[in-house]
Amino acid sequence: MIRLWIDTDVGDDPDDAIALLFAMAHPDIEVVGVSTVDGDLDRRTRVARTLVDAPVYRGDDPDLGRALTLAAPDALLAIGPLTNVAALAEAGVALPVVTLMGGVLGTVRHWGASMPVEHNFSRDPAAAARVLECCAPMIVPLDVTLSMRLSAAQLGRLLTAAPVLEPSVRAFLDLQRDAGVASEERAVFLHDPLALETLVDPSVVQVEPLRLAIEPDGRLVEAMDGTVAKVVRAADAPRAIGEILGLIARSVG
Picture (tube, rainbow, N blue to C red):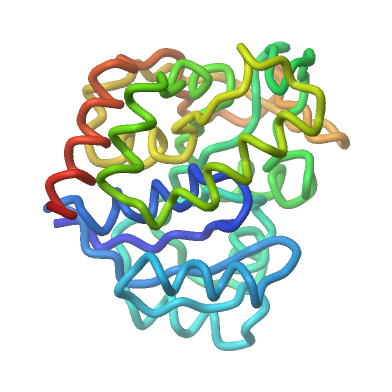
């Protein structure tokens, strides 16, 4: 059993919410705490509390470090900007093994455009750089998580199993439409659930140690003098998607 703390920016892209439901459904995970990060923390905290049966804290809670220490997690899953994780490290809080979704190696096409910088790293590049340097994280980057695109049938299966997700999924797809993303490119991806799957079932991914640096704009780059980190380079996406959707469906049913 893995005692897990999750740091999340749940409330926008529904993949955070899916990851929280997946964590609650997994028989080998005990969610011992959740913290919210980035932007409207009150809203994110309210959303998180509807999805998990565990203590949920605002990221700016002055007692966050003490709460995490008392919870004694075995692992920390960071699926938002790394502001909280970096602040905890700077404050001297002893952190468990960190698995994070963030960064992109190279340039990918996402949201109808070429994207050289991933959202979580771009929101707080200094925090991302600090976590890379101090926490020896397992990095699950966007160039791999894009393989976790749900088909229409898979999305329908997910919403049937977890109708609580429907408003956020519909709003997210509408947001893509309003941003001018072509209909064939609008989708829900299981970015954050793949990071959690990497933690609980490493056999679903291929991992490689790389020397990395994070540039001031949040770009993740290989660098000869960079910090060595473990990076997911490929995933068995059909298997991972099947396991995630299956667990959520069985837990609700």
